[in-house]
Structure formats: C-alpha cells, structure tokens
Image (cartoon, rainbow over all chains, first blue to last red; front, side, top):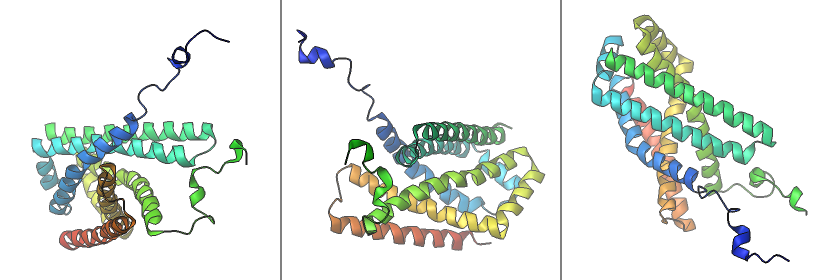
Length: 125
Length: 128
C-alpha cells in the first residue's frame, strides 16, 4: 500500500492538456474559410475565362493576392486537419495510419508552398 | 465480446444500420472533403502555370477546358458548395443549435439543395 495520495498518483499522468486543440483549430479554420471561399468563388466567376495578362493583372492587386495567400494557407491547414481525422478513423494498422498521415501532410505542405509562391511571384513580379 | 474485438469506427457502414439521411450526409461531408483535397491539385497547377508563363497558362487553360477537366471542375464546385454548406451546418451544431431530428433533416435538405442550386448557378454564370 502506498502512502501517496490518489491525487499524487495521477498527477502528471493525465492528458497533455491539448486534447481539444485539433478540434478547435479545425473549427477556427472552417470559420475563416467561409468568407474566403465565398470570395474565391465569386472571383473565379469573373476570371475563369480570363487570358494570361488579364489574370495576372487581376491577381497582382495586393488585396486579392493577400486574400488568395490567406485562402491557400488556411485551406491547406484545414485539409491537413481533416485528412488526419479520416485516417485516424479508417486506416489500420497503426503503421499504415502513421505513414498515410505523414505522406499526406508533407504533400499538402508542399502544395501549399508551391501555390503561395506562385501567387507571390505574380503579385511581386 | 472482449475489448480487443470491439468493432472499429466504420462499422456503422454495413449491415448493422440502414442508411439514414443524417448518416449519408455525414459521410458525404468527409467524402467531399477528401475530394476537395484531390481537387486542390488542379488549383495549384493553375496558379503555378500562371506564375510560370503564357505558354504554361495557355496549356493549363486547354487542360482545364477539356471535357474531363470541366467534369472534374464541375464536381469540384459541387463538393466545395456541399462542404461549405454542410460545414456551416456543423458550426451551428457546435454552437448547440439544430440537434432535433426534425431540424437536422430540414437543414440537411437545405444543404443538399443549396449545394446543387449554387453549383448550377455558378456554371450558368461562368459558361463561356
């Protein structure tokens, strides 16, 4: 029998205190994506048929380029969080889940980097 | 049944439960989310082509303007509106509203119809 109190037994063995962080960030990004996606869709209606010069001129506006970078960054972050939940629910065994998650997060980060650099090149070029 | 043999998450898909409006919309939210992730490849390709130069951009316009490209973009548009509308439905649930079955069915149909109508509207406006 231990003379330590029940509280002393469990102290330090609990959660990392970030159990809700993933859930919360997914919500925060989704709230941010509502206006960003609406802006994106309405914008695409205007430039979907645009030629090269028109499109580059359109995107070189700093407000639009900024909104596009914000959309891409938040969108790929949200995508990464969402794919993580899907893998955690459906992919077994643990090793396959881990590899799928790692590969997806690397690819999504890369896609985010490529697209943001593309926007910046047009905006700053 | 021992703890080791308990059924894991997707066990609700299969013979144990009949598909319901709410569960079908829920799995569609995930499916559209995953589909949108795949579709971002086209968005990245388009933006990169515009950054590379006029020839790459013209080529991207041809690829995206092809039958297959347009079909993918059409489905991507619907997935985007579905995920957006159902995402807003989820945010209301997160805030504690709309849990009654009657309300969940009503908001569910609103998601289905708004996603279809907004998709068709976009394609009518953007049609060349």
